[in-house]
Length: 339
Image 1 (cartoon, rainbow, N blue to C red):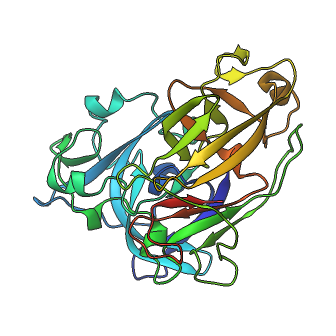
Image 2 (image 1 turned 60 degrees about the vertical axis):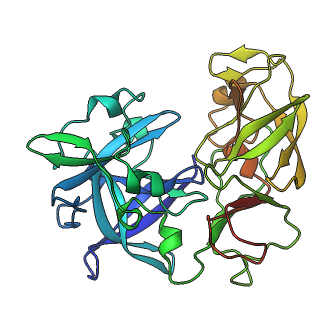
């Protein structure tokens, strides 16, 4: 998993803490940190609902859900600061137990072991994790008002929702560029790369020859044409640890593909404006890869039904941009991917 360090502070103060092992996720929005990773001295103010009650958040991912309070922090990433930004504090003991309509959403990711990190840094193609829908309607499995030991779904203004910190930067706030080196077919124990803030705002974040592929304005999804079918639900997601796509012809082994020999495949990613970029990739035997004791793999993949998830292996050897909804860039407004 792609990891970084994040510094958070009590808003407007020098009371800060740096937390390591935070997963970088272009498939979600907002910073989420385990309460167990925070020191007691870091007393972050709670976000309150319209009636003054504390606010909690349920966030559903493909692998499970997180539950915790919504609090405000100054988020420091390199030299950038997202001031007074709403974050989720996972498993915060100050909020009541998980409501049933959240806990029914899969596996609980409420510990470092279950989350496989100390938190998630969502730098996806939107500013807020829910948006206008949660601002106008009390949607289940999103935001909750908590009083007297129970939490009920509530509306929450967009400005108070858990927010992609990049969108709150004073500058370089229209997206991110992730660059990771190429990797051998056998994998590597670890790799290092960079995440650069902004698109076209500095000399080191220019689009250059990258193909811009606009995403759906509501979901962010692009399309992928693969083996004679077109999948309308496709996304580029550094938070997924493999490539995931439908391919009945490739032998499987549980959640993964295990071909007898390395498979070379190709697909085309298609933007909402019909712009297309070809992608070539390889698929290895997952059991062989896992037996290598390496951790980083560029050819790890598994089956899905009806959608394509271009996960972390997609990023190796590429410059991948994620532009944020409605933010101005030299190639037009987000949301879009470019590579």
